[in-house]
Length: 243
Image 1 (tube, one colour):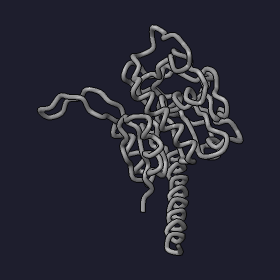
Image 2 (cartoon, helix red, strand yellow):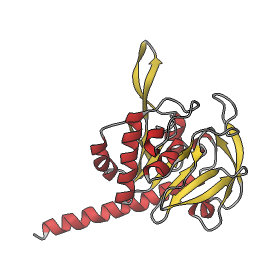
Image 3 (cartoon, helix red, strand yellow):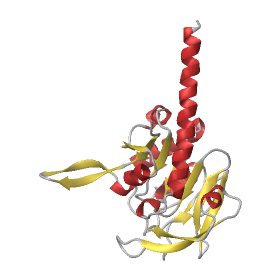
Image 4 (cartoon, rainbow, N blue to C red):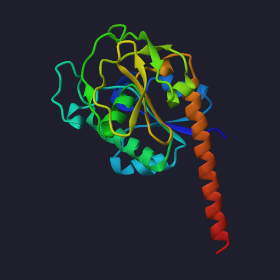
């Protein structure tokens, strides 16, 4: 059975067919990337933070997708004029998902905004604007990412690699417990990971490329999580039968 990986989505206005209304959106590249790596994808629209732990408990792994800039209020900063409009409902929901995944030992991958929110959720801050990490408005750029030897990411991708990128914010102060695992050539933090457990954030968009190494590692961790959950259920059922 395929492991189940939840992917966060966002609320926006969309048009399709004869309809034009609010919708839970996610570029198809996210779920197809997860599926190509060998997992089943489950899309997670924003919900009340109180339901995050319950939601995560049903997953084998979690992806926090890219999107709008994180609200600077969350890291004690005034908005830069170049910072985009906040998505506060999504910030709240995804922060709760991140904390729940870490608490429950559920493998977690943060992509672009997802990596930034991981850093903020754990107590770090962001640089609100930098240039050179897009190909223009609505156009992906490409740049080289260099792994930090000895990190989880370096074990997955040991060489410098060109990656698809589209962001104008980045990690400023690194959150406690996180380790930098890759840099761009200009020094920008491009990947972070949590000490202990399978928690990785990447600043680029792996779903827009053909390299499946990170996604396959997430799926492998998800399979291990699924096996653990199956074993726990079996032990609980056996205990009840013995009562």
